[in-house]
Length: 197
Image (tube, rainbow, N blue to C red):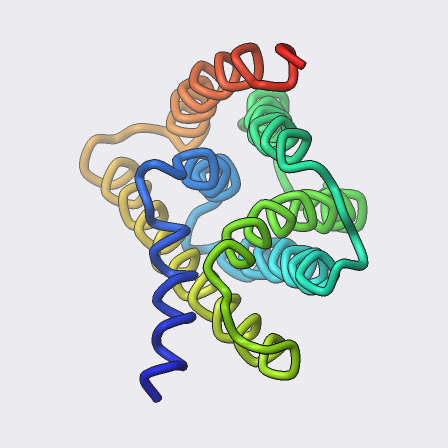
């Protein structure tokens, strides 16, 4: 049981680590357009994201996919920027007419990018043998999903409080937070190590 919690807690801490704020920014951008009424759609998109994340984590951990960490670190803030900009262009528009399929494929790709980043973190701390790796990966992913769920729920609660008590519209809330996310993501891209190589 203690081994189970070691990897689960590692995944949990990695998501909620303030130093890893690129993922936190991504989760904010993912959640902010939605309210509690739309939890099913948010859950679906999060599930697709985590599927892509686990597939990439698995393939990378077993050496099937090998991508330089500097490239992954460059792609992470780009996924954040794209998602936040998508929010700006679609804010206030009805999501009923939007097809989930294209967004789903994009979320799958974004999940794979983030999964590659998770794999770097996982491999740096994994010291077990190859036969136990799949179990440890599942435990690690479980911690990631649990932390993401808590964070997404927290953003929904904050949004509900702002809509209800401060009379902010969902559109304005989405615009403000998405603009903030863009403002943080852009310097991350421009100052990335990839430009120095």
